[in-house]
Image (cartoon, rainbow, N blue to C red; front, side, top):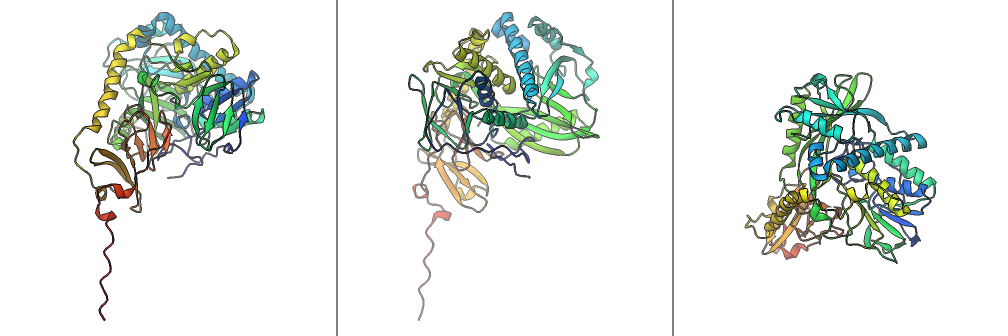
Length: 530
Ligand code: FES
C-alpha cells in the first residue's frame, strides 16, 4: 500500500490521504498571545480560524498531528442539506420550524464554502452536484412522505426522480439540487496557506494538554508552552476539555468506505444515500475520460463494539458489488469515526458547564463538512456579538424531550460496556497473539492491552481508558485500541489519537504480568567440561 504523506489516525489510508503532500508547520516552542486559540486542524478548526481572521481576530491554531490528519481527511466530503436522519425524524424531534432552520443553516454552509472557494481561488476539485435520497423498498410510501417533510422544511426544489437513475432497483429517488463535493485535503491545505499568509499562527505536533477558560484563558501544551487568549474554540471532532457534559449525549461510531472505478457516465455524478433503511452512502466523481470514481460507505457500528472490522469491509464490498455490478477492482478502503448526537444535529457553540469563553464544535452526525462550517458561522457571530438564528438549535446544552428515549438507550449501552471489568474471560497468553496484532489480557483484576509487533516485540499498557475507565478493545483493521464507552482511540503503542481522552494509555512494565515463555529468563549456558 502506498504510504500517505501525512500522519493519520489509523492503519488504513483514505483516497484523499494517499500520496497527498500536506503543508507542514512547526510545533509551538514558545509562549504566544492570541485573541482566539483554536484546537484542531480539521475543517472545523480551519474554517473557524479563516472566518474569525476575516473579522480581524488574532488566531493561534494548535493541531496534535498534521493539518487534515483526523476525520476530515477520511470524510466522503460532501456538503448537503440531507443529514443522516430523515427529515421526518428531524421534524418529529425539532418541529417544523426547527427543520426549516436546519435546512436554512445547511444551505448557508454550502453557499459559504462556494464563496470561500471562489473568492480565494482554491483548487480543490469543487463540483456542484445533486444529492439524492433513495429507498430500496421495505418502507412503503416512505419516500413520498420524506419528500413532503423536505418541502415543509423549505427545500422547495427537491423533487422525485426516475427510479432508474441508479443501477439497482429502488422504490423512489429524491433529487436535491445544487449540493457540493470537493477534495477535503486540498480545501484544508489552501485554507491553512491562506491563514498563514494573512498572519494567523498554526502549530502542528502540538498537544493541548490543559485547557483553561475564564478571565485568564490559556492552553498549556504537552511541552509546557502557553497560549494566552481571550477565547478558546475546541474543534477536535469530540471535545477533549470536558469529561461528561457532551459525551453522554453523543455516541462514537466507526464507518467504512471503499472506492473503485466505474465506466464514465454509468451513474450520474453526485451523491446518494439511503437514510430510510440501510444507511449506505455513495459519491460519484470524475476520474478520467473513460472512468468515474465511486466511493461507497456504510456498515458502521459503535466504536469498540465490533470484534471483527474485516467482516464490515467484506459486507460493504459485497453490497457494493451487488448494487454496482460494473465495479472492477476496489482501489482503497478505509474507516473513519462519526459522532452521532441523540437528536441528529451537531453541538455547536458555547460549551455547557464551562466558562463563558470556551466553545465547541462536535457531534458531526454524519454531516461533518456542513456542521463544521455552520459551527464556524455560529461561533463567529457569538464572538462578534451578532444575533445568529441557529444558536439555540445547535446549542451544546440543549436537551430535546423527543430524544430522551434515545439518550437513555444509548447511555445504557455505554454503561454495559463497563461490565468488561467483571466478565470472566479466558486468560489469553501473550504467545497466542499473532504478530502485528493486539489483545486485552487479564492479570487478576487488571486488564492489560498487549500489542505484539511484526518482530514479536510486545508493548504493554493498561487497558483502562484514561477518560472514564472503560476497557479498550483491539481494532484489528486500524491497529488501534478503541474505547467502547465514548469512542476514545489510542494507537497500538498507547498514544491517544482521538478524544475525549486527552492522555495516553498508561504503560505497564512487562515484569508485572504473568510470566510467559517469551518473558522467561534465558536458560544459563551449560557448564563447560574440562
Ligand atoms: Fe470515555 Fe473511554 S472514552 S471511558
